[in-house]
Amino acid sequence: MGGAVIAYDTETTGLNVHRDEVFAYSICEADSSAATVYPEVYRLDGSAVRRYTSRVKLEDIWKEGKAPKVMHKSKFDLPMTERVLGRSLKEQPFHDTMIQSHLIRSNHPSHALKDLAWELAGIPKDDEDAIKKFLKGKKGDRNYSMVPEPIMTEYQERDALRTILLHHFFYPQIKSDPKMLEVYNNELDLIRTSIDIERRGMMLNPQRCHTLINSTERAALGVLDDIEQYAGRRINPDSPNDLHWLLFQKAGLPITRYTKTGKPCTEKEVLFDLRREFGHHVIESVLKFRSWSKAVTTMRSYLKLMDADHIIHPTLNTCEADTGRESCSNPNLQNVPKMGVLLNPYAVPVRSLFMPRPGHVIFYIDFSGIEFRLAVYYSRDQTLINLVRSGGDPHALAAEIFFGDQFRNERDPAIKKTMRNAAKNMNFAIIYGAGVATIAAGLNLPVSVVMARYQEYKRRLPGLAALSERMTKLAQAQGYVETVFGRRLYVPRGQAFVATNYLIQGTAADILKRAQVRVDKYLKAATGGEVAILLPIHDELVIEYPRKRMADVQEVLRSSVELMQDFPEIDVPLDAEMQVAAANWESKSPFKLTA
Image (cartoon, rainbow, N blue to C red):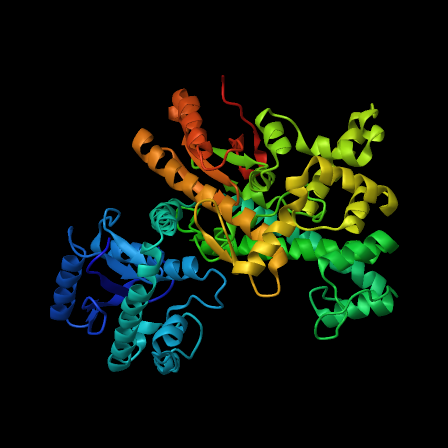
């Protein structure tokens, strides 16, 4: 993909790739030094002659064998262009300057096209201001196609120019590093995979959604009535002023924390602390109302975002987090509330709204304990590496070290599990730099006892105990950490202590992204696309499977799991757990592959 390239940018009537339209596009070619550039602008609206000419030009640009196209956020431009052309562009080579920027400077304040071009090439951003004044009015009533053409033309020319110049600045740096180039190429493959995932989407049960909204709203109104009876007037728990009066004046609860602006803090953690300390009934009412009103807002957004077939097409942000993790928006289906979560005791079963398509079931393949396994890998702690390889339990070992005979001699499985879980939490706390006082609090043991036992921990597991300090020093010395795959993650100045977290999160991101691309390609080849990925969720792939193919489910899922686990770069085995849902997302149950 070296050599000549063409910058390409679309202008659209909105940001929804499934509903909005391309009304114009721009291209830009440059000589080998990028000293001379040739921006061109084409309109797909206006006169019939112009529409025809622009369409012919667009077909020519995207003809097989043409130079690779360079885009800034190709995951938007590619599907929009595919809709215009009526065909897939999957085999077309392309580049993405936003991905390039993320890889070269992961913690940069902005990866926006205009910000980067102003910073690196001195191209002014005043064309954005010229556009905005024509977009004033009721939201949704106006879009870029309504901007006068001379102003829009200058805007388009500059965006094409910006894109080509950024590519000539960024890509040589990526190409010069083989490992970074591999990471970059996988990110481009992930763009294609993510476009297909978004296009397929998740099915919503609208009837169930309406029913749950109505029942949740009634429950929330009942809570408001209860609060009113106690307070003597109607209170809005979402209003800071109302809530301050209710909690700190009427109920007389103490202010335990202030916001940056000097006002009493009422975040969930503060309410839970007050609840634990004082147990006032009004706190329960506030927690109920907040949880239920937020759930209603979320569910209404689902109804608004679904299409005529009851499918929600979320936006996957493949490379926008500092750690390289994927995220999801419009809506965020990676963060649908769970039932039975300690910090959300009044959760609404929102996950039950998502269902398999008719004639399908949904499988969930989750990397089990991947963060700790990666910590073991990077620690090079041979004791733990051998233990994980043999199927042992590192968290039981930590419990044995910290609780001693109390853990070894305990006969009650529930109590033993509690101690093991506490030790597990402290294993993670140590990985991320916790001191003795924090460890003692987490284990509910005296500091004097933990001090001696932590010395034993460091003697037996020296690599893991030293990981945080080692990574912090490395980040302080070079300004970044690098995953085993070659992704550089720049650590903010003065926050080198987050280096271990960045390293582990970034490596987990690399693994899931590669697994996603591999599994997607395999499923297309092996099942003709009948089996497909619905969503990546942190360390998990959600896969929709037709019931008519259940005869080969073991073979297909086993091959998928093998592709997800096949990372010889990491000499600690990766484990995967599976679940299946036949009715809805909430009804998951374990699923085992046969031997």
